[in-house]
Length: 67
Image (cartoon, rainbow, N blue to C red):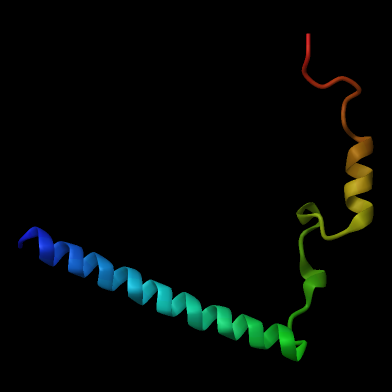
């Protein structure tokens, strides 16, 4: 198999992956616009909750790094 054929195959795979991601992105956009996506299911470490990030600041050690 020559080099040009390998390049064409790799490009075709990349285009196929891009097309699949475009379809998934469009589906996600439609779900968000119709209100079918619930963002309250994010894990607490994701920063979605305001209280969880404030409480984690209190758990930090008094001195971080430095000499």
